[in-house]
Amino acid sequence: RQEQFRALRGVESVSIDGVAVSLNMNAGLLVDLPQLEEAGAEGIGLFRTELQFMISSTMPRIEEQETFYRSVLRQAGDHPVTFRSLDIGGDKVVPYFRSAEEENPALGWRAIRLSLDRPALLRGQYRALLRAAEGQELKLMVPMVTEVEELRRAKDLLKKEVNRLSRLGHDLPRRLQFGAMLEVPSLLWQLDELMAEVDFLSVGSNDLFQFVMAVDRGNSRVSDRFDPLNRPFLRILRQVVEAADRTRTPLTLCGELAGRTLSAMALIGLGFRSISMSPASIGPVKSMLLSLDVKALESELLAALSERETENSKSIRKILAQFAE
Ligand code: PEP
Ligand code: MG
Image (cartoon, rainbow, N blue to C red; front, side):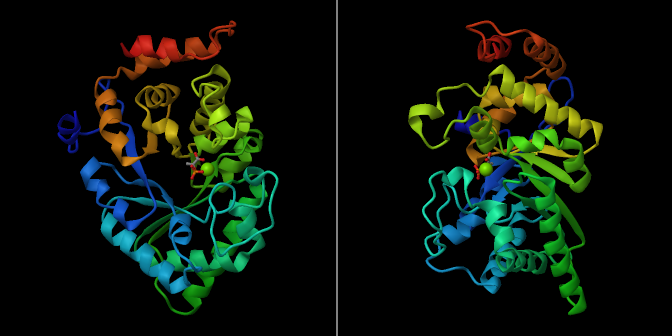
């Protein structure tokens, strides 16, 4: 099967009814980069910048960050890379960044919350990214946004760095795109304001599922208790697709869901035209897409979502599996 998937590397990712879906990979370290070619990914849909911080025993200096991002961009070549600014805290522990013990770390001082409280840290990271991407395209996104205001504040810090660099006579990126991750349910009731502030939106389905279902993603006792292919969760994702279509906002999804063949199929049926996953999943997902009739799936899926759920049919996994058969 591995060989079969390798043979698909150069094949365009288009369904049998002609729907193109951009298949991207998640990464975080330089060792991941060769996978772009190996797996045949279009780009890096999620670059987890916190990994450089997590494997270092001291805080990486701005110059080190810049060197690292430069290498990432050089190795990625023509493949677009979306860098996510620091997502530390919660399950992502950085040894030299000690904060007080928290009773609920997933809901605590993490990601953009921490970055906005330590603006020098975020500004330093933005500076490193801007310098590394001079003359090129730069895509940045903000993790764990809860309210649109946080995005505006992050954007202000980014603007300050852009102005500073141009004042100092540095070249800037040729094009700068600024996006948000949708992983906190509160954003679902701010979709139009949110879309007005961003160039693109990326659903972090791992955290979104955790917060929607109130299920700790790291606790095996509960993490598999509810099926992500349940109606409420898929209805939410459909609502996000509709809002993105309405406002013409480029949309992608970069959680684990994207890398499982059946759930990737569901996402495509919901209207996602770009997803990002672990490199090993690209082959299997592409193979599924190449034999998929998106129009037929869409009508079946939307019909299943509009049905009222009965006791045993909260998940539509069976319906999707039958369709896949
Ligand atoms: C997510 O939450 O779905 C996501 C992609 O980010 P992470 O897994 O790094 O929290
Ligand atoms: Mg997340």
